[in-house]
Length: 144
Image (tube, rainbow, N blue to C red; front, side, top):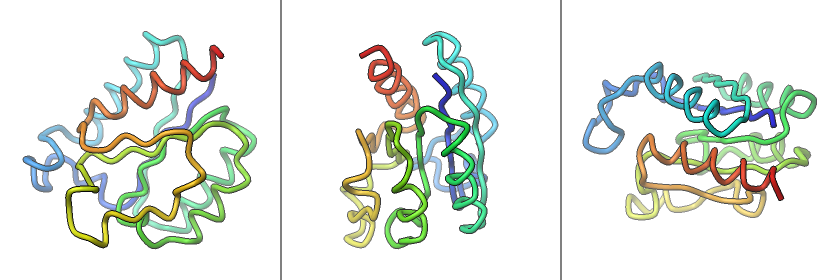
């Protein structure tokens, strides 16, 4: 199973943004951990990050032909980018939405996801371990 892990806006600032909320590790630390977890689960992961919404849309377009499943963390775009939703909609494999912080317990505007209804699962508030959980969910779906 090929899984694209697509991180969006400001995820490159991990380790510099509020560590109590997002953890102390960097994006590189996160990606290294994702690759290790993927190997243990027998799946192939590819991590990508951008701060440009159009490039994120291009990542989603590329995934149509190059990935069997997705882990998506669009960051703040989660709450308002209909362009990202529209780009995700034709993807036929399972998708898990991940957020490091518990967006359901934060500001009201963060509690809405435009991706709702397009994902097979959602993991929030588990920090970096949320990516492990998402990989496990997708590996289980792949075995089904």
